[in-house]
Length: 268
Ligand SMILES: [Ca+2]
Ligand SMILES: [Ca+2]
Ligand SMILES: [Ca+2]
Image (cartoon, rainbow, N blue to C red; front, side, top):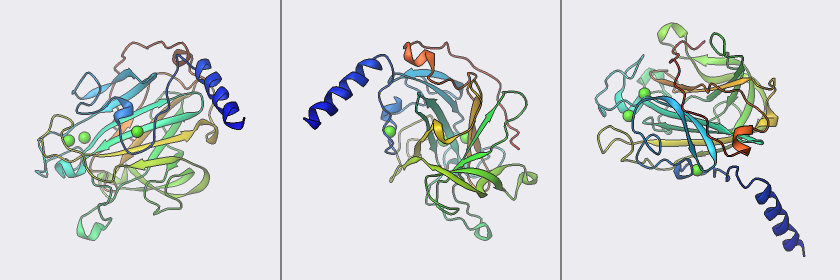
């Protein structure tokens, strides 16, 4: 009886959301984002925009360094594929934010500045009005070096890269835990994605975080940012639309036209 009730509830909910999204599975695999060997299901190019997949409208930034492991400049720093922040994806439904990252940076890279090796940074989130540059007041801990791996933090202090005039935030240095995200990181690298050499390695990060963990005004824009602890390369996704609860376009199964907007580099 209980199982029957669960089933009928699931069917009812399923029907209610029939034109909306299927769940994204937080497993460190990005097939549920429509990504296999290209940066979007239909393009392999750098840029910013949106695509629709799996019932979601997915906002993305792609910035792929394609010269392999040659220590070249990934901007602003160097390191080639091993320090390439390649693509960042953001979507949401009425309950959760979903973020995916693709990077050439091995999540197991030791953090030892004296040996010139730098570990992964944390995800930074900002809710803002879209004017000027976002201030990142929330973080998702990726390593457990500060607090709990997968923890959602109200951040009161960020570590910054020792380079680039200390301009770029990297990892959570101070803050209060306000929730828990579901975080998945690929255990082994994937090859054959993007426009670089076929043996380039790529790692996937994926998380979901409940909208209810964050405090923001209806219609706020949300930006997500990630880099490694040297900030040799960074990536930010910055959708042009505000966060609505629930997103009307998702419920109606509508697709927003692709919109490209200016690239923002200065992160404070
Ligand atoms: Ca997945
Ligand atoms: Ca690359
Ligand atoms: Ca890059």
